[in-house]
Length: 169
Figure 1 (cartoon, rainbow, N blue to C red):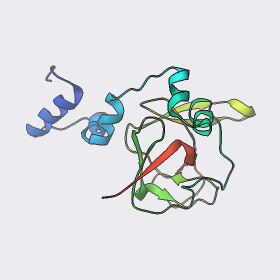
Figure 2 (cartoon, rainbow, N blue to C red):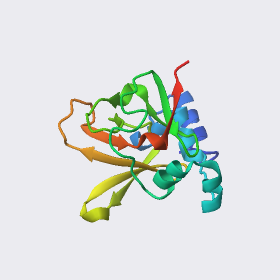
Figure 3 (cartoon, one colour):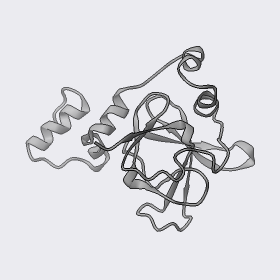
Figure 4 (cartoon, rainbow, N blue to C red):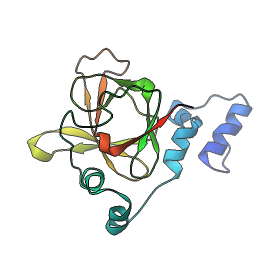
């Protein structure tokens, strides 16, 4: 195995040599995934407060939740990409968005490597919290096995305030 350069460079070399890429490394071939993994964003609380609105700070940095049905992206259906409102990292493609009827934007999958999962036992519930891999901003929660007709049987329930939409161009 080649042992030089970054993981992305090694994968590119393997591809050029027509070698099989291990499945646990394939997500690095996606340029959006590589961006999420390489651009860690670290700011102090005061730096976050300076760049986020009070509502964005409450949700992204303090793990808040916007009221159901109030977010601008709940029923949004324009083609494009949803990025983290805190750091700009691309998180979700509009092709993975679906109407779950829950009152928040719902996606069945994230851009590989862009979203991290963490156990959340707050409020007396056991859930899986989802955060932006780059900046750690709280996005919402992911639920599995609800029976939605999606390829992953998952619902990423995301606060609109955590997102910024970019039209497909």
